Image 1 (cartoon, rainbow, N blue to C red):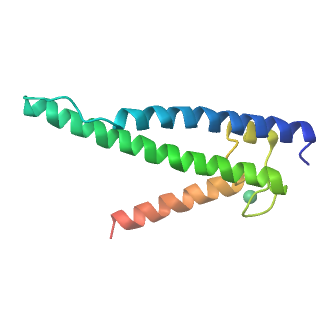
Image 2: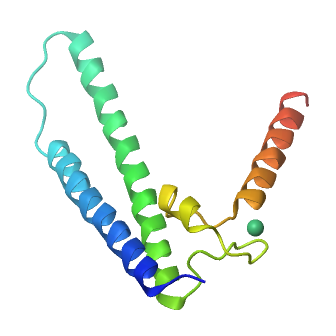
Length: 126
Ligand SMILES: [Zn+2]
């Protein structure tokens, strides 16, 4: 059973990460505004374009991460945080400290990863 101390600990941890990400996302977004300076060299221009798509990928990843953190906070709120969504076993606090956003216990996680590897292999040989 998760103690009140654990609950507060994870809530603070997740809120801190969310706060940090919001700052990061704002920074990336600011960099997106304003037209780029003139680059007479087409190579520079291409480099700039690929920089932009890199920025977009980062922002996409940040959005997904923020969403995952929000979900974890919701789970803390409704009391399902730290419960494996597959087998409903308690996820160890040690594991949660390392990966606070996880929704699976170690067994189910390894099972899913093995399953994923099997699928990937099957796809490759098709
Ligand atoms: Zn499980």
